[in-house]
Length: 427
Ligand code: ACO
Image (cartoon, rainbow, N blue to C red; front, side):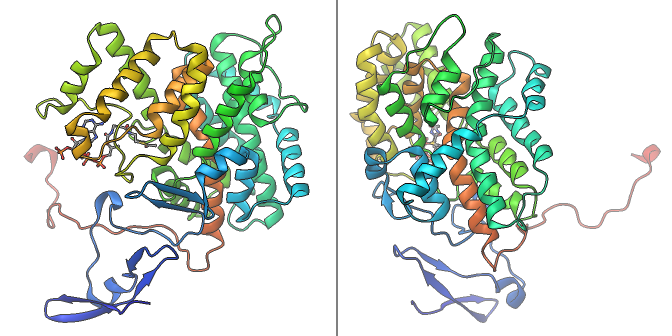
């Protein structure tokens, strides 16, 4: 335990407790500062604010480390499965084999969605963005399961967590089938989570779909890599919405909305759009690199740089190898070739080296999804499928924290002082 911090404001010294996390992260506890001094801290974008204590995920952006419940993602992607990692983050420990078997079984068993909800897919335009469909249908699930919130029992929460993880991939695949006008393919009890998803996406009554084990392996890895990333925008949304004791399904729908933004989960879609622009322009990728370096131009290379990782994104490092393996099968795609050229040139460019801008996970995930045949608009949906166990774990941790309060930041008001109303004829 370090000494208290001292803050001198207007000649008065305030002692503020400090705390140190298990990996040495340090914080000054300002919870009582406003009461004692009348001052709040101002930190837009929360760049320097810890919103909670958490035991789920550890990130060290400088060293490029990411661990769930202490276990490095390199080990999890090599040895584990998405179902097992989901259980790990949700329960805090690796499941014993009987627990994992049971979880995998109920994941498949709960993959069906209510028929009324399925039929509501026809109320969306066929070209609706699948994130809009996913968010709406998950919100719709709150209508089917209205009583799951911070006051629910452990059993009810466990069932809801399984339900959400199971049904998300079905909603995602159904929204795709709806968009291409094909009949829905229901989940099968004989298939695992990722196999089921690929089968629901790509098989049809006339065209059977042969599940490729390399694609299943790649998808499992991608889902594992996206399971959690501590207090990012959508996880913080989950906690903020959940802190009002809102229904769990509705808090997840809010997180889906947050994830959809191009600065968060929408980045992998931006990567593919950028690659398509480079391709259509017929120019050399180097021209776009120069454009990204030009300060008079707002263009940035999508898929490079990260707010937290000022080193190689560890998720990108893991997925890069898988990417190469899958690309060997589909290397003819010109966008994929442009991506490889771009990466090679950026990694040797001083501008990017000096600013510690490396490819992030979104750079490779988009490429891999494309190689799997997943359409660009679905990329962020895949991110949401992977992130589901993380969001629920963040929510669970929050509701079980006795110090938790409704999230309600302060502000510094900088608008007009008291101003009298002017009647419309005098304005
Ligand atoms: N291309 C060109 N220059 C860049 C890029 C980029 N992709 N990213 C950062 N820079 C430059 C900035 O212009 C700035 O240069 P300067 O110091 O000369 O002014 C410097 O690098 C630092 O950039 P910041 O914006 O201050 O870094 P920050 O940490 O705030 O931003 C972000 C991180 C938003 C991810 C940024 O790198 C970016 O816009 N990348 C492209 C979008 C992207 O790929 N997002 C996905 C993130 S991963 C995820 O959400 C799962």
